[in-house]
Amino acid sequence: MSYQIAVLAGDGIGPEVMAEARKVLSAVEARFALEMEYAEFDVGGIAIDKHGCPLPAATLQGCAAADAILFGSVGGPKWEKLPPNEQPERGALLPLRGHFELFCNLRPAKLHSGLEHMSPLRSDISARGFDVLCVRELTGGIYFGKPKGRQGEGEDEEAFDTMRYSRREIARIARIAFEAARGRRKKVTSVDKANVLACSVLWRQVVEEVARDFPDVELEHIYIDNATMQLLRRPHEFDVMLCSNLFGDILSDEIAMLTGSMGLLASASMNAGGFGLFEPAGGSAPDIAGKGIANPVAQILSAALMLRHSLKQEAAAAAIERAVGKALADGYLTGELLSAEHRADAKTTTQMGDYIAKAIREGV
Ligand code: NAD
Ligand code: IPM
Ligand code: MN
Image 1 (cartoon, rainbow, N blue to C red):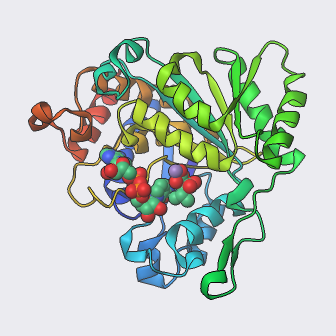
Image 2: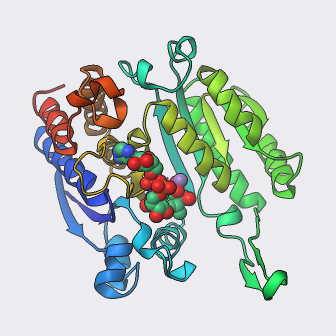
């Protein structure tokens, strides 16, 4: 049986890091006798430039026909002045998440051995390491709530977004967090702002109801502001962090940086049927795009999440993760992971992909 993968590399560093993920996928295909077929589609800014819209019908159809979507990143300064709904993020990525009902976003982050010194954490804290799974609700909350818009003029002009969550939306993502915790350290930290937001009060209530089905899992609640600081103080005490859409977005960038770089954090966005879009948690990184220096690890680990969650190829997924772990432990690093005095040793995007693919071929 062969798997059909829709490849949407997108903008900025997207195509650069996607090339390395493809290289690594070829290595696991050979080693694990997998058959994968890839179809490439335009998305985001490049699709605006070529076809006049960020999510062409052919791209959406290609995604619908595939077993999984491997996504790079979209957006950049060139398209920032367009009307909001025509921009890459709001015109392509969010509609893709909404269309396929990819409500379940998993962002696993751990401090890799060898990278303790590259974490911005204080050394006694980074020495303890951490392993956090951010479970982010991805198709509700303030991102998708209606009404959303602008009205009025002059000094009275105003803009508004609506934060809205239903019991159903909260319960289904909470259930995922508890189930994930069962396979880990059996602790869920639910992140909210229940001291201010009505959505968070309902969120807390529903999470507690779901928790009753998981008596073996510890549940704690934490306010988002406190969560951002406790992550810096005691990251090792967190296991699964259950977040609404906006809070998960913010916390996941913080967690990524605690591991040393935005370029390390992978992400799986899935629907109830297990169909998913797999992408780095970071963006198109316009500041480093085109230089061949972006870290491809987040894209490569996103391919591993695709193999694990959508294609059910655990052995291949684990091999990719081991190969990435080896590269990092060997000190094989892109420049953003190195201090100024070691920057001369930085590996390029391509060198990273080659090294990881080679480790897989050699049976890591
Ligand atoms: P960003 O994540 O692109 O960049 C933030 C910082 O992290 C930059 O300094 C960048 O150089 C660094 N970084 C990110 N990925 C890296 C990698 N792989 N290797 C090394 N360094 C890396 O966030 P931003 O600058 O706020 O956003 C840039 C554009 O990307 C915007 O248009 C934004 O909307 C878009 N964006 C897209 C996605 C997506 O497609 N999933 C996600 C986030 C942001
Ligand atoms: C992410 C990104 C997106 C989000 C943007 C690009 C819409 O920041 O995947 O974290 O906010 O969800
Ligand atoms: Mn984000």
